[in-house]
Length: 217
Ligand code: SF4
Image (tube, rainbow, N blue to C red):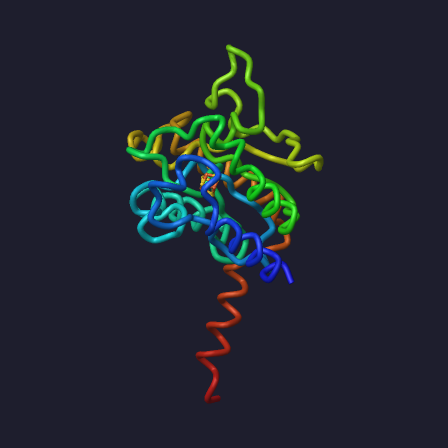
């Protein structure tokens, strides 16, 4: 049901040229994940070059790093998450999308969140955070990340947490206490324990594995 509703939104998005990004894109980057099982919507910034080529969000080195962190936290990218960006088309030279572009594209994001109706939203990086929260001058992503908050998407409140963008973590390798990578692990563990306490993919996989191993017994 969710899938067929999203297909209608996607077909409209594929024809969209409402902002300048529509003129230079190769592909729209609509989403990734299983809409029928996703419990969390993760919102990133914008498609980059590889995303524009593949039509899929968070691929390449940053995407792989995100996958590694998710797997370690016990969050399934394919089953637990529905991944989108603040804009569906790649900004030239990977610049930050402009407010007017994000505003123009918001109708698609709003529809996707409404259809998925997630238990929580992850704001991945400063651009996603600033799209939903008015920060004062003293607030930075480093101060806001890891805190549960309520954000409003098209008139409806959702539980949300901000995490670092994996592109930032590619430039910060330390795993020392208080380092961005260590904080990312802590934040994802918090999200898993708070939002997905009833989901245990390890146990699911183990049962499947045992069944396969004993299939002929
Ligand atoms: S970024 Fe969004 S609003 Fe702009 S052309 Fe692409 S789909 Fe349309």
